[in-house]
Image (cartoon, rainbow, N blue to C red; front, top):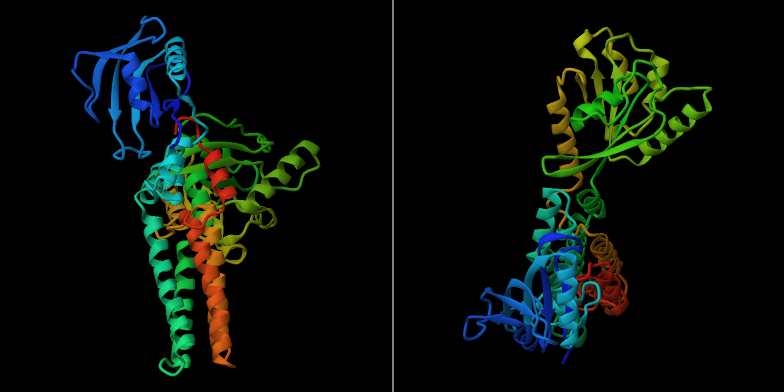
Amino acid sequence: MSDTITAFATPPGIGGVAVLRVSGPDAEGILRAMFRHSRGSLASHVLTYGRLVDPSNNEIIDECMAVFMRAPRTFTREDVAEIHCHGGLAVMDWVLRAVRTLGARIAEPGEFTRRAFENGRIDLTQAEAVMRLIGARGEAAARAAVRQLSGGASRFVKEVADELINALAGIEAALDFPDEIEEQETAARVADLSESLAHKLMQASDPRAGRVLDDGLDAVISGPPNAGKSSLLNALLEENRAIVHSVPGTTRDVLTAEMTVAGLRVRLSDTAGLRETDDPVESIGVDRARARLANADLVLMMVDASVPFETDGLCAAISAPLDRMIILLNKCDMGVAADESAFDTIAPDVHRMRISAKTGEGLDAVRDLIAKRASTLAPESAILSGARHAQAAQAAARSLSEAAASLRGGGYRGAALDLAAIDLRSALQGLESITGVAADEAVIDRIFSTFCVGK
């Protein structure tokens, strides 16, 4: 039997209400020892008004609400008590100290969720989804976490694992009963299935999607000096974050701010104007701007369309991968003097649009393009978007591909089936590590160590 743990489920600090959670065999006894109420008994899962008293001297600590939840209908599948007291630091400290004197110990980070996992309430992907949901900073990230918490990833992994188990059973049957089961037919069938499952896993696993959902789309505003990059940053954020001046080269460093577009978090960066310069400080800014371009998910390439283009300057500025670029022809409110055909050679097939960061013309379309790029990089079809999940799934896919190669390689079929079975078992073990069925203890420890105390 496990011991009894306690911790505040609400974040530290001063607030209207603080929730202290207690889980374990002594949860009911602890609550009864310090909670005074008018009800005859504490019914399970019923929130009750009463007073908290210090068990050492019966002094009233606080007026509060409390609830006792009897196992197994709880998050941890243990007896759980919650005390909803006022969120003052002195009150919280007093309540926690009283609960500890009654035998509870402070929970380790993530220990409540770990108990839910160890008691079969959730699997490892759902446990990770708890913290992913807590840390979500955009609606898209929250929706992805809810899908994972609801078992979307678990169901997908189980379906693939079940097909692998059936394939292994077929191989074992062909090896054990060669006179009754045609080995060549079995090899062809399992090879087709292995290739299909490998493709399915690769489509469903995308660590980049998880990064975009959790960390945000990395969008960089770039271009020649005085193209209106800082003005665009301010306009998209709807606040004055960047210094705007008519003198070229005002921006010397990377300025990053966050915004939300269509429920997706976006990290928007204003960078130094790209040009050759003898100014050592500006040169550092240009180098930093180019470095950010190399890893950006989206590049908003700004050019001043109110003056004729300088082809050499454009060639120097448009250096990022074209497949991640949108060209914004800015200052169209001042009239378009530039010849857009220059881009047909410099950046063919790159989407172009006319905007005015000053008047706001075209900015809604820019937001739509940013949202479209983010949704493309983080599609809902990427079921296994967590880095750990994607890595394990892609390793399983490689094992499946190796199994298919062994089966299609010809030669002695029995040996091919044996080799394929080894690869299929490796793939199965990799999938089971995702849900925690076969996860290494060190991996589990590392996952729960990232949780906050009280969850």
